[in-house]
Length: 285
Image (tube, rainbow, N blue to C red; front, side, top):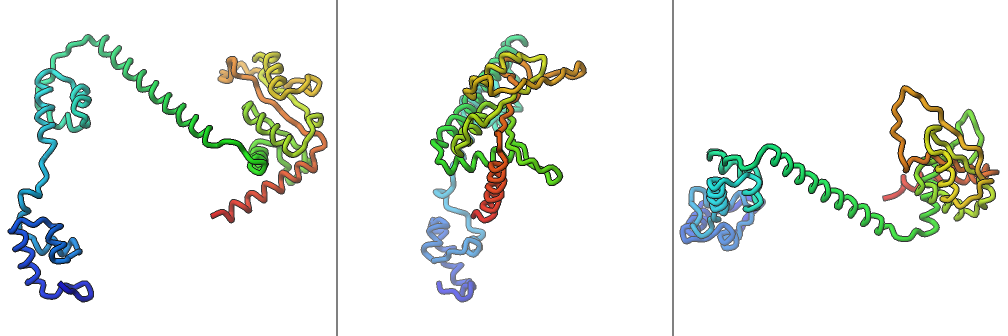
């Protein structure tokens, strides 16, 4: 039927045709295609009051699941067992069988606790596997870095973790401090990219006095591949007996300070490059 400005002409005649088709067993889709009525609201109004044909009614698939759930419950199955067997949600199982008597307890409280603990441990194991898989996939997705990418990473890394001038204290020193060996390695790779000779670097270990100081000194020296002569005297943090330290154990090695000698020019380049990154981010789309 033709229509103008969204209003159908001869609406009553159109309704008579729609009702006739409905009584012949047509579905809404078939009526739509036959009468070329593509407005769902109007289509439903045309057949209002006419029941749909039997063949278009969807079977209630959950009726069978409900009966099966009740049958299993009467056999003494638990909610968990029914849920796993039928592949439906716990809320559905509860709704279907909550009027039935609970099955007799077949396990002691201790056995139930042990089973629950085992199930929880398995969930934790699966979560940890998923966590590690996500990390590994992300690591592999990075791939190799271009010189420009490493340059921008190094500038951002320094501006987040390195020493910066204050308006009231212009020193223009390049000093980087971190406890993460990965951060240290990336920073050194960045300095290599910029052509900063290793002879211009001085290192200082900062660590709690109660930690393995000698072990930490050897660890950082091996990591950066520097002779002990490039290391300043280790800075020890005094222990406060009122505090409980959490940075303990074999993995605690304090922080490493990396200072670039005669670094004023490098500092200016870092600061300027950082502001260039900020401008680039503002214009990114």
